[in-house]
Amino acid sequence: MPKLNIVILAAGLGKRMHSTLPKVLHPLAGRPLLSHVLDTARALVPEKICVVYGHGGETVPQTIADRKLIWVKQEPQLGTGHALMQTLPHLDKKGVTLVLYGDVPLTKVETLQGLIATAAAKYLALLTLELDEPSGYGRIVRSSGDKITAIVEEKDASKAQRQIREINTGIMAIPNQYLHDWLPRLENRNAQKEYYLTDIVALAVKDGVRVEAARPGHVWEILGINSKVQLAALERIYQNESASRLLEQGVTLADPARIDIRGQLTCGGDVAIDINCIFEGAVQLGDNVRVGAHSILKNVKVAAGTLIAPFSHIEDAEIGKNCRIGPYARIRPGTRLASEVHIGNFVEVKNSSIAAGSKANHLSYIGDAVVGKNVNIGAGTITCNYDGANKHQTIIEDDVFIGSDTQLIAPLTVAKGTTIGAGSTITKNTPPQSLTLSRAKQMSIAGWKRPVKKTKSGK
Ligand code: UD1
Ligand code: CA
Image (cartoon, rainbow, N blue to C red; front, top):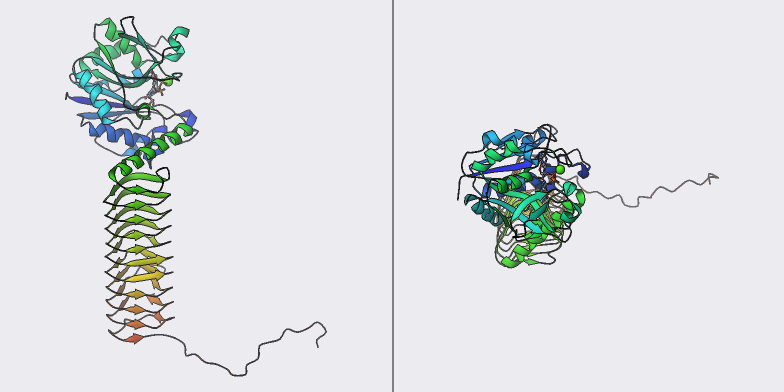
């Protein structure tokens, strides 16, 4: 592979998005369009990556926040050729420059490798494609000998040229030695008064440099985003591709059309995922993990054999082997569950560790707690971790049994083997193996009469 420079053009306006957010920052699969292009660019291991930005100002470099990138501001935006001219001082004299668009997010690395290899042989390499509906794109003009002679923009094209179905995707690889010569020679005598990068094709022909075209494997690799309609369509394509990959790996998906992956989902063997689940960030599911319908997992590791029942929401957590979570569980950041832990419906766990075999099956809040082994937390138990100013820790040692509707006022240690009577408010540490309860004595008044409603007449 030659010395590689990559330029990502991302200065355009994106008027049709009807948004104040710069176009390249709109999310696809939960991440900015530009981040997808940057992933692809980095996978090609270039010497440098220049990003041309303009519209939206500093928001773009600030959001992407990568100091290794060379950010080049283009203002005003006078066309794709003008955009590339701004990067010229940064480009090497030798090697190849690959041009990508910040709003074309799904181009495959293999497709680009082919293009780069062609340019390394000192040809101008264009990614082109035949479309049934070519309107809007620049057209590839070929000679009678089928040699590429020019790219003509739709607005400048003759009626005959508009019939051409081979289009310019905009993605191209250029030998640097020619690029340094061609860019200063571009002119803006055209319908849009812009400096067209595409005009380098005619310059190549003039200089006797061969122009070669390569095809992408899929049409979606070259699709750009100009509107929310196109963004939504490309999102579905992306999700469909992700789902297909999982199916090919042997993951069971109840419906490949109803899963959304916004990050990296890694699955072991015999994983089954029901409908409408969302996976964000890095999620790892071990062997035989089952995820129930409508669950949302973000940055979660789930060990083998665990069942996540429907409508569970889990974020920044580690779940051990053979656990049972949900339905309707909420597991918040900083939670670590060991093996065979049960977290049932309407239980919220935050920043807590729970050791093997412990259970909180119904309606509880466990926050800032360290829970030992084989603990049973009764329905409605609350760790009162917050005093209005600070958070405090609750320690619940092994083999504790907590009766229903108990409040544990932190900081607090419930010692090993304690039983807490239902309905207690526990404010002091308990001694081990004790029964501890705090409860008003029950009393009954025999023969007590209920009040009777007065009538209007007073009788
Ligand atoms: C361009 C190509 C056209 C091709 C089409 C594919 C030219 C002259 N035309 O068309 O042949 O079929 O892409 O989509 O190259 N940009 C800048 N600065 C500018 C202008 C554009 O950074 O001054 C960036 C945009 O943000 C975008 C990309 O370049 O990422 C392409 O710009 P766009 O206006 O969408 O391309 P077209 O001119 O329609
Ligand atoms: Ca344009």
